[in-house]
Length: 148
Image (spheres, helix red, strand yellow):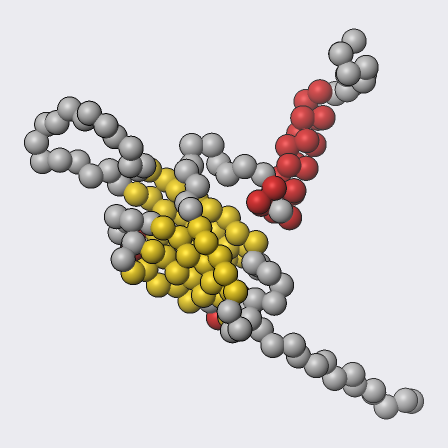
């Protein structure tokens, strides 16, 4: 019997498939609650709010803007970056190598008041700035169809 005192499932294969499916669904609902993909480095980010927008700023020094991919699904924004290593023209032996290269990924859940369809992004001096304008409250009119 397992140490936890819980009996083993009758169908471990099915049990594991159900657990995997629940993890996938939880990742869709709250991607920040789960760790990023293994092997992917996390990009440092600042976020702040102005009167008009929510702004995200990410440090991406030395990245080609064409290597930045922004994907938005509903209020989930995923930032993916592929940073290639700088290879010297001649053969070298590194003494210290601290700069990171490879695939970077960051997933952000945007607040409800953001109008995701009007987001803008710009890359300048190694900083990716994403502006997410806030939507205005909209009054919904109630129609009263004619009674028959």
